[in-house]
Length: 115
Image 1: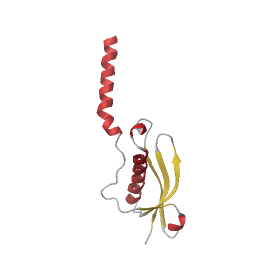
Image 2: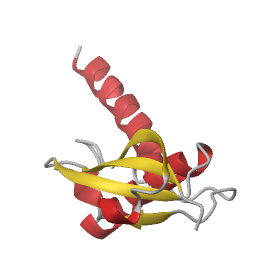
Image 3: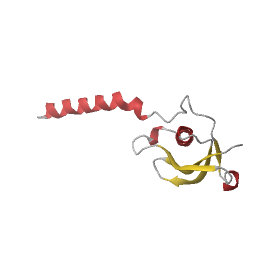
Image 4: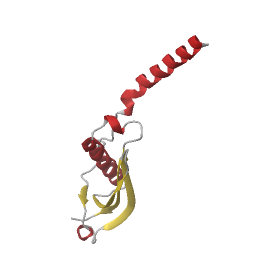
């Protein structure tokens, strides 16, 4: 019975090791992502056309220990920009940073501005 538990442990460890590289991947800007400007003041986007609300997030309970805060933040912003670009937006108004212990999450709104 102990040999069976050891074999199962090695199999599970092997699966974890094979998938561990994927665990450290973060959001990158897509090749087709247009330039999207980010604003923290509503005055900058009040004359623009509202498109949709966005949530950009990076990090999970199992990988946040291995990724720096800077990388988590940049990846979360990249997630927002990719979503906004896919919607045809060229501006994001950041509403707030949602504080979690294991991830970086931003809530914002996508806009299309003529300028």
